[in-house]
Every structure is written in structure tokens, then in C-alpha cells.
Length: 146
Image 1 (cartoon, rainbow, N blue to C red):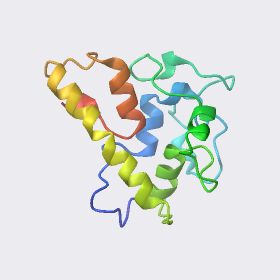
Image 2: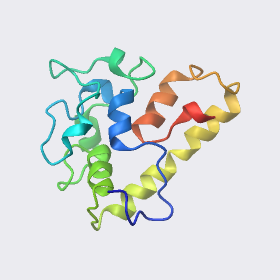
Image 3: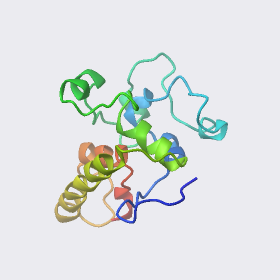
């Protein structure tokens, strides 16, 4: 795991850490796919009923669009039908595909939001811009460190 990452791709948190912190309203992987390590689920904040719960997110706010919207925008590829986080989990586990370049570019594009948080919030105020910070966490950026 976490070997041979593209040198441009430096996520702040692992998939397991993301699940433990609280992402996607607990909905993503609430079915605990068997392809991922069992220890990812031990402290994961997952939806108990298959619905999104903003209180399961680290920052307590919704910060994601529906899967249907992502599909309509053409951002979902058949190899990862759940989207970017599924790609990241599989990449983290060692899978490499022709879609890696596109996904890494999408991840890099999120850095602008980190810059906006840095420029708008006092150091240590982790609840300034909670929706933007939650979105960053969905992309494996940890804004708590700024």
C-alpha cells in the first residue's frame, strides 16, 4: 500500500483516516466492500441506513454533490463507478490504470481551495469555512494542519 505514488500526488490522509474522520456523510462505502482491508471499517463513520448524514462528516456539514450529478458531468468512469474516492482507495492499494493522470489532475485542482482557506481563515480556526474544509477532506487534503 501507498507505494509508487505519482510524485505530484501527495494526499494528506489515507483512505482509512478519511473514513475515520468522517467523509461523504457516511454514505460512501457504508456497504464495506470486501476488496479493502477490514481494519478500514473498525472506526469508520458510516451511515447506518444507507442515507447521507451530515453529522457523520468531520465538519458536520454536507459538502458533496450526488453521484447522479457526478455521472451527468461525465466525471465517473466505469472502472470506478463510485467516483474519485473509490479510485483513490484502489490507487492507495497499488492499482494503476490509464485513468490515474486524470484523477491526479482533479486532485491537484482542489489545491486552490486550500489556498482560499489559508487566505481567509485565522491559523488554528479549523471551523472557518467548514463546507470548503469538508470538501477538501473528501479529496484527502487535511485543512486542520493550516
